[in-house]
Length: 397
Image 1 (cartoon, helix red, strand yellow):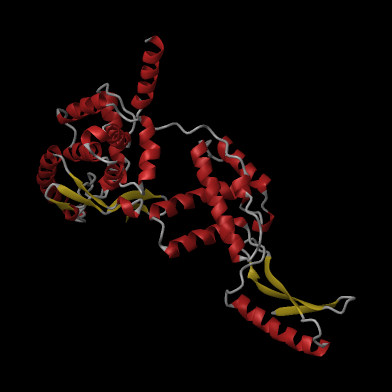
Image 2 (cartoon, one colour):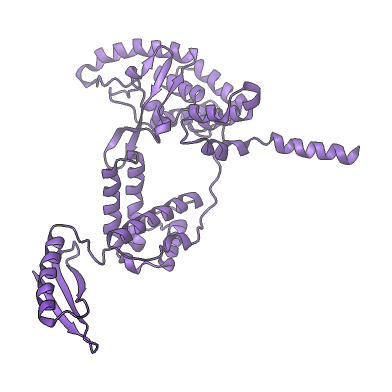
């Protein structure tokens, strides 16, 4: 039901405050939407009253049909609405959406109950302090600088969306909050010697064929872990594999086959000879497994399965490699570190191998060459060392 209150100023201006009860919020408070209609100068009071009734009816209809957003929504509500908006746009990967959903708990703990129109720089700054410091009682670990920055960027986008939704002209405070947090450590790649040592040890071990194949593909092809786990037999054509999907473990739905990280991540890779040999061996073993497991085996076309016949958990090969390295006295950094070695070595040998940055970027499935250059070109310390050597020769000659 709509209500309206008329107000006449001393200068004769007539305005009408219209209020509509849109329902009850989850916390039990009333959700009241309101607007003000001002009669044009020169309009008689009788005509203004009549037009105000029409405006009231229109506003009430707009509210009940969802065309008028809540005037003072909480950040938590707008954050949930923004994530749903992104899902409808279908422009972001399911992995990105899952990451944003994971942000909600810690953000809600800090500014979730605040009205979006009341959030200022100091509130976003406090959120950043909370993220960087963590909270042991609530199980929140301190976050690194890079992750805190990602949180702030997300808050900025939610506020931008909120301001557009409620038609609020306001400067977004998020970019003005200073980033703090433990400096993000650059993930260390393996040396070529370390890679060869690990590969030799794996080839001579009794490790299950599926794990040998998983690690070999990760090493030789520089794939993301989810991309390896997401390979289907239908993606394989001879010694090439079309990388079309990734397998990720999401908080909401468990193991899910998702789109690749970016459109450029869809690419074709070439398997090394050793991978083809392992693949043929795996096919033979899986025929036996299917018979043993019977109906429990899920014939879903995935190359990598667990011991129960279901698609493999993307994180499990990492645990297998970690244990293998520990048991055999080998260096373990991360399964993903093989990808860093793949990119770094190609960048370092770019000129000698006649491979361009563009080619390397495509092989790695990066969104653009800027990512490749930013993440890997600076890893090559040789040009810098060369400069010092040249200057030394100048001084001592």
